[in-house]
Length: 166
Image 1 (cartoon, rainbow, N blue to C red):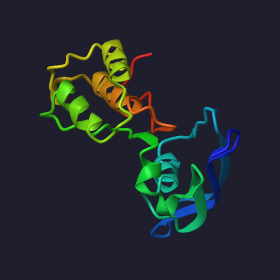
Image 2 (tube, rainbow, N blue to C red):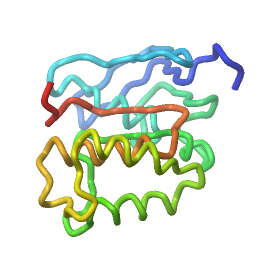
Image 3 (tube, rainbow, N blue to C red):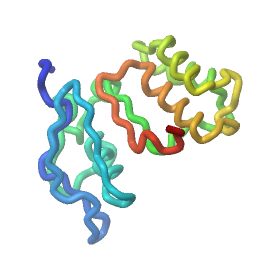
Image 4 (cartoon, helix red, strand yellow):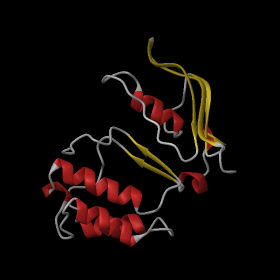
């Protein structure tokens, strides 16, 4: 992509669950290099919108493009350029911090150990601690470390402050 292009575009993005609209007619353009937030109360459709944008949920109507590709058909090479942290990071409870890093690194040739270690240190994560023994804020910190270490071109955080102290 050329610098200055939009990394995300949506036109009329709509999703119904049964007869109830979760997202209705979302139009947006997110320019490269910007910080963009979806704000609204619980149940407003923020997570649904994110999941449609990332091709994880089929829209009822409308379309979206991410990094220049139709979000409904994102190739693995494009998905590998996106870092996505859900509102509840899903590291198995039995997995240690070190094992989670090793496992995640195996999928990303661009893995930057120094980024992982820096974020993990910020959240005071013990490399030998199991995910189930971490506080909620530490689990979010582990999720952030795991999503930032590959150096994603596009970073999508769903409710990034959930469980974090100011």
